[in-house]
Image (cartoon, rainbow, N blue to C red; front, side, top):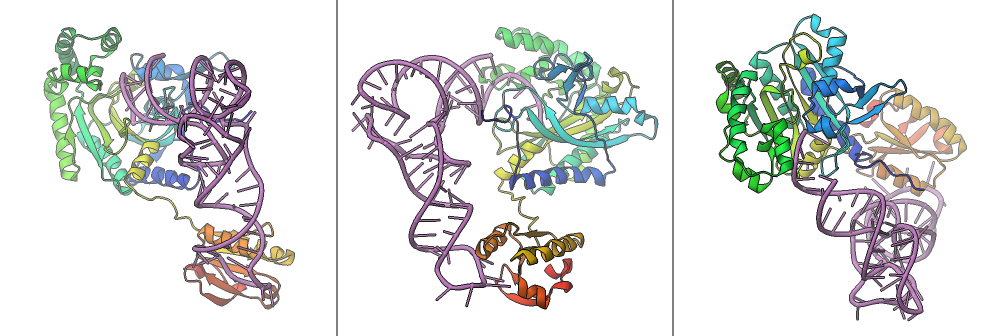
Length: 415
RNA sequence: GUGGGCGUAGCUCAGCUGGUAGAGCACCCGGUUGUGGUCCGGGAUGUCGCGGGUUCGAGCCCCGUCGCUCACCCCA
């Protein structure tokens, strides 16, 4: 019996895990600069948080959730997305009672029982932010700018930003009427018709050529915005212009979660496969109320860490190899080991990155180990070093050694 | 849920029309006493995904099964 990881999960190990960690850090750092604070939340919630929050009609809820009964007979679901859980926590703990907006960020694993493919996993990772309680279009622009900055931090360039407005409920009602009429005349198969029944906008997202062709003349939601929605959207665009953020208006963009209203956006990478969405988000003005909170608007995003890493790799951006050791210690003999174990510990506490060759390896093998580790310096410690207190510090790049007093070595010795 | 591709050493893969398993990388040891990278020599490693069938003989053919992968639906 050989164990295997469950289907469709992503796993990261060296050197790739170093890049993964860096992606996560860089994606979230602009949010910290903008005053967003960490929210550490459970990865599972009462199932209803998602069915009511995300919407029964979505694929995410209807067929992709990991749902189970816990020992108390409660229905629990592994979180398929972040926003609904954030809302639950904000409402439950009254975070929305203070100054608005509430600005939070989160990061961690999410779960969707989908058929895996390139860039799509059953356990995947996101960082996300939410700004709750403000419907100023400036906050829309801020949220988008934070995502954009995260990608730029990593050095990504081959991506684009699509934005649109999904309008308020009045806008959508007006549009839905004409859209449904348009769709009813199309020749669609049964499964597609059933999907459209739930949310006619979905048809804009269909990749099948025949459908794309049929939808070419479909009425666009963006043409049915109420004056308020249209003006909000205009201001978002104006602020993005001021920020120098380039975007494309994509009126055919569809978000997969039902709670989105107004501004919606998506970052799409051009070198990824079918799953090219790096991240996306939007405004969700009715979500909080539908989860039993007060009627506050909000906007946020979720950025896929896995996909962003894939994008970095596709662009040839190297994010690994920056945690190389300062020093690699090679003790020879038992006495040397006695000495080294403390010597190394002192250096680490002094802030140096130190690795060593335990296990009584032959010197040649140990030096190889020093080489492979990428250490800046190596030092061999044997009987003579211990008795004299002086060792040869070897610069691994130049191959040059220089005598040093062991007791004088500290974290600064390696610069 | 639907469709395509692929499962051979730790990794990447080769293996012609069936004849009894290989390369590169990585790993370990050595090339005169305690100094890496290059070079040279040596070494370990596989139920050829699993089960069945055809055959004197199957990694190669047939059937089934499991897994991985890419794509559709959908999405991060």
